[in-house]
Amino acid sequence: MSATTIEPLLTIEDLARLLGVPVPTIYAWRYRGEGPRGYKVGRHVRFRLAEVNAWLEGRADVAKVA
Image (tube, rainbow, N blue to C red; front, top):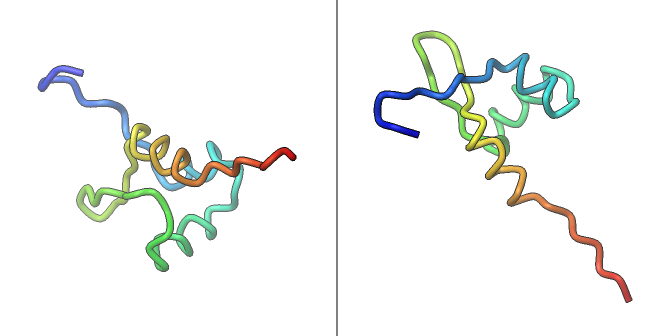
C-alpha cells in the first residue's frame, strides 16, 4: 500500500457483520479492551481490516491432535 492509499475502514456494524457477532459484543470488547484496535475518526470508531485480521490470527484455536 502506498503512502497516498488509504484502505477502506470498517464501521462497528461492518465489523460485527464480518465476525458474525452482535453489535453490542463489539462495544463490550472495546469496553474491556479485548477487541481489535479501533481508530477514532471524529465521534466515530473505525477499524482497519489488516488490524482485524491480525487480531483474529492472535486468537486462532489450534486443536491438538493426539
